[in-house]
Amino acid sequence: MSSTYTLISFDLCPYVERSRVVLHEKGQAFEQVFIDLKNKPDWFLKLSPRGKVPVLVVDEVPIFESAVINEFLEEVLPEPALLPEGAVERARARAWIAFTNDVLMEGLGTLWFAGGDAQQVAQGLKTVRGALERIEEALRAREEGTYFSGASFGLVDATLAPVFTRWASMEAMGWGALLDGLEEVQAYSRALLARESVQAARAEGLTEKMVALLRGE
Image 1 (tube, helix red, strand yellow):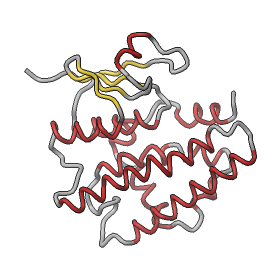
Image 2 (spheres, rainbow, N blue to C red):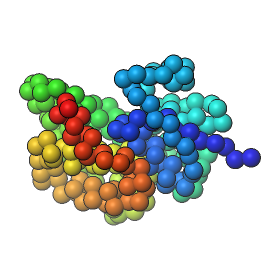
Image 3 (tube, helix red, strand yellow):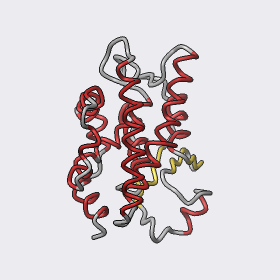
Image 4 (cartoon, rainbow, N blue to C red):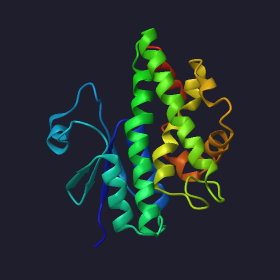
């Protein structure tokens, strides 16, 4: 008997989007349950110790944290493989996922939720630009290929894809210059946005909803 998968989601959450990308890459059917993060239902809080999405419920067992969910999916749905074969390369991929979470996403969070505070905006812009410059260096170091680790789409790409599906909203806020001069990142962004799984995982009306959120509307 095959397992059932239910992804508890919030439509604008980039972390949920990552797991949607992986589920689509794996060709795994799943249901989605959307919640309001400003009014979290009691049943959700019982499933999620941190009160955050995503939560993937597999045969009534909840799994939380997007990186853990994605590694679980890689383990139980091994094809197509989204981590490299070698131990060093797998560790490198996990390290860049941690970097994305701890540096790039932290900077974006500062920027997105600055609420018009000029100092916070400046700090967010600085952190995001620095993170993107490090990603540019990593992309330039590739021997070949379109994606982060080369020719094959992987978990690092699924982790970074939501940054770029939101880039049109960044441009609408006047922050598009963060990509100036980062030619490899720009090409990488285009490759990610052209990926079928990335488009399938994207929330409907994402740019408009993100712009409204960033403008406090």
